[in-house]
Length: 447
Image 1 (cartoon, helix red, strand yellow):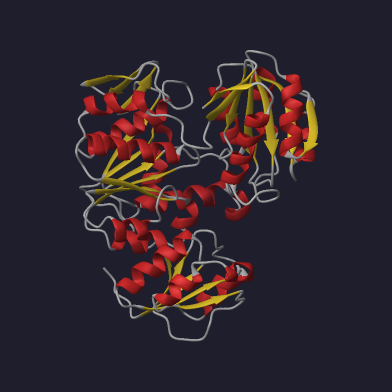
Image 2 (image 1 turned 120 degrees about the vertical axis):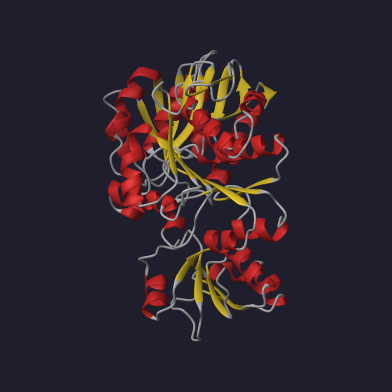
């Protein structure tokens, strides 16, 4: 564990605040800064100052001083002007995730991928807890890792959701069990190309040792083994009998010796089945009996804003998948629905090419109601395949979908874009959708 005498904490969202608290608990001199001046009137400034931190808001360049390390929140671009100036000063960058992990004395499961991470992280934590292990979901989902370590120092396991943003500033991070769920087009507005994005994901495995486990889809194993240079035991999962851990309808399999029934579970479908196989692989690698996995999975329900049913109005089901912020997640969300779909999509685009979704929309979707900055581009890309209407706002889209949908249909919010054009974050967008549904006359079912 590397110790520090002074640290610059960059970004004062949840991750930055957690890092500052952890460092001050170790007696480190902390200067905490944020580029956003508007946050200056909010806590946590007062609380951090009480802990002895120097806090500065609205900064454009790193403050003067000698710092052993700059702890970086994932929202900050490594190639942006602020962190570029930090690097020019010779101050090493460190992910908040790695800072927290480096202080943990238990074991770690880390989950990365383009889609489905949060549900898998929560499910793995549930499996470990059901087997009698203390497990804390954290990282990009749940608590920041630094907060989890401070509040749960005696936990047996951290189950960490790991993003490509966090991996940009990792150096020594080494999970005992690493899981790559999938690699789909995402975050190219930040990373530029798919290869850069995929190689960042591979960094999660770079420091693994012979006693560690790396779980990947069968088609990615060799590339990730080469890119990462990591050791450990490389195992595979997927909806195929040739994987070490496989899914088939109603069943999970460990090749050669185990079959676990999951009929009717959230994971029992073409979209999430492979993720269930990953859960079986990671959980059993952590010592959880397969039978416990089979007991836990049928009780898993959708997490908030992730394919979450929020109400039924006159026979029309409304589903909130506000976390679906790329084309691949939109396609998966549509494919998961068991009813004809009326789609609400839009927001601030992370991608410029929406055409990959055309085949799924043509097959499964009756109409699209587009919102936000991406609306015109979506109508242009999809209008030849499915009826599209540029509604502008989420409220207008819900009203239009209400008029169009018939009993037995589903109205699905799966935006593709981020929320930042009209909302604070994906949760506010999803909560707004829930309220709009609840306000519809005749809403009889509360989910």
